[in-house]
Length: 183
Image (tube, rainbow, N blue to C red; front, top):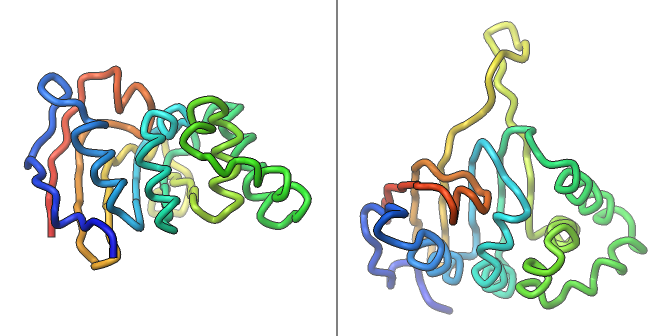
């Protein structure tokens, strides 16, 4: 069994003015996780490329990411997501996408192709959250909750909640804070 989430000395809070959210929190957790579950208002393939080394470790360990987000994707990201789901059913498209074996490098150089590959390989599941009212009608506003769960092979869990979306802005550029809870 590989490194465990329980081995991490995590802080109860990370703030982007005093720590690097990606290097200090996301990467160490992704490198030990076998499952990364994330709920956000916004997701972009650029957010995946920011955490490329962690995503590589997750995928190399046979892990998976499950994402729930509002339906506010860029046109390019939406096309890559669709291509990935189509490729799951189409052997030829899947074979073409199989050239993305070095996923960390591809995530930084060809984030859209890598996004499609992650979905085609069943390593990333994307679900869309649409708020509805009591009458099952779409209501104003967007799903904007932000939480995440990392799980490892030993069933250790690191949960977090806070302000960042799964975007490069949320992970790198903006002022953001998260609260961390470990099993």
